[in-house]
Image 1: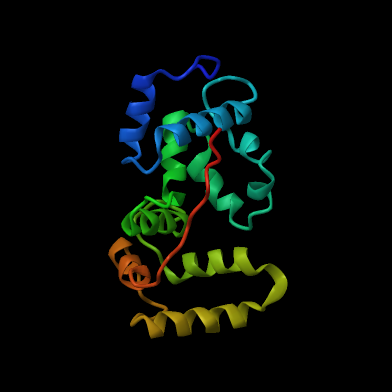
Image 2: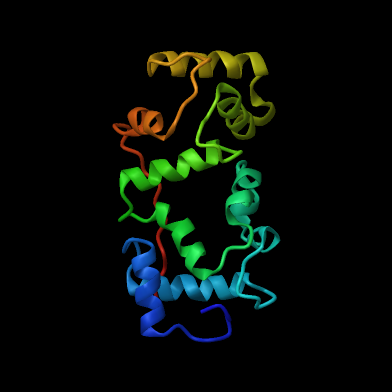
Length: 175
């Protein structure tokens, strides 16, 4: 499985399926493997951030710089696990964990007001002022029972997003 020029065996498919908690069917895993091989231009068995940039939807994503640290150097099994949060079969917990990792840029398990503000800045660019961003974010936190001095952990994200009807789904084309 490390060499992208090889074919996936049934064992590989089942191992990847188990690794991603059955969020993808075997057909979807085969399709993802084909896409992985297309992205892995040097056939090294890993996808670099630069190779991910060849995906137009990723290249224009305002959060792409934050996602780079999560994806640079992924092998196929890690690639599928990374994408599993976007499966319709992924649990809400899994989706919220993924979102939390995007906000937790230093990986310390905590998200401060400044982390939230950084993501909001990435998403809004020059469209709103820094003062407007801070005001919006302060109001959202207060509505959820927090202040701008609160340090959020994963369970706080679950509390905030748990009843939101969160949808993060991507359709995997299968042949």
